[in-house]
Structures are given as C-alpha cells and as structure tokens.
Length: 110
Length: 138
Image (cartoon, chains in turn red, yellow):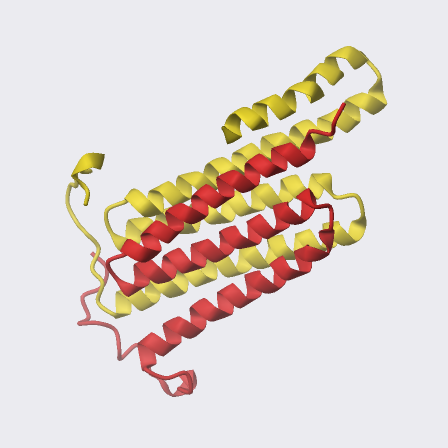
C-alpha cells in the first residue's frame, strides 16, 4: 500500500494556495492602505505554512529554516512599512515621538 | 477535488486499522496519522475561514479580527500536525521555533496595523449592516 500522507499534505497545500489567492484578491481590491498591509501580513503567514507542508511533501525538512526566516522577515517588513507610512521616514527615532499627542482628535473608541 | 483527495487518501489508513485488530504497534502508528489528518483539517478550516472573512467582511476592523484570530489558531494547528509527522528531533525543534515566532509575531503585527489605522483616522463602521448578494459586488 502506498503511504497516503504525501497525498494528504498535497491536498493541504492546495487549500493553502486557495487561501493565498483569496488574500491576493483582498490585496488588489483593498480600499485602504491598512487593508493591503493586513492582506500582505496574512499572505506571509500562509506562505510560512505552505513552505512547512511542502518541505514534508518533498521529504527535505531543511526548508523549514527558510520558513522560519520568512516568518521573522514578514513581521519586520510589516513593522517597517507601518513606521514608514506613519512618520514618512525609516530613520525617525521612536523615542523622540510623543505618541499620546498624535492621537486623532481625542475622541476615543466608540 | 482536493477534499475528495484527502478523504480517499485517509481511507486506506482506516482500513488498515480495522484489519489490524488489537495489534498495538499498528494502532499507535495509525493513530498518529489520524491525529495528523484531524489537526490538518482543523487548521485548514480556520485558515480558509479567516481568508473568506478577510475577503467578505464589511470594514477594516472586522477584517482585522478575521485575519488576526483565525491565522494564529490555524497556523498553530497545522504546525502541530506537522510535528506529529516529524521523524527526528531537529525537525521538531525547528517547527516549534516556527510555531513560537508565529504565535508571538502574528498578534503583534495585527495590533500594530490596528493601532496605525486608528491613529490615521480610520473609523469603524457602526450600526447594522446587511451583506450584499454575491452578484451585486463589482
């Protein structure tokens, strides 16, 4: 009997690709910048999962290192893009920014 | 097609378990596979539900909720299913590191995006909202 586990994982990667395509749809059609950022971040998480499952399919678990690297780079890229769009530059020292003063029109959450 | 593939691929495992009777070694080996399939299906359910939520929910903060909540749980379930299939401790250690970093960084990134959107003046949609039919959306 053939080992069914690679086929099960192949189905899992197909479903993960479906989820990634849905994320791409939100990335292209997202009305605001933050929708797109959220879609990119979620796409990265799914890419990490895809890489992990794919490494098990081809039976070469070394690739999980790449998934680990991608998870960390995804997080740092999200934070960097957010900082750039908030302050207009990546060289701003966050210790000099008074975060309480910059809150929008002091309404508070509804 | 993929769901049918999953079900068809899981069937010989179940047939083996039935044929083996009370052979404990075979039972334990197949139990690992069955648990792997269960955790994979659970994780894929949460990942797909989160994706559909991000695509369909009405405003930014509800989409944030869909992505942030379900990505963490779905990713952890899928990684745990892979840990059950690992055959040496280095792979287990690497997968645990991936799971730990995803568990820490995914909610942090979600919070950062939400905070930045709130500071930029993105307002949540209030009041009742009725989803448009699928054919009405451009």
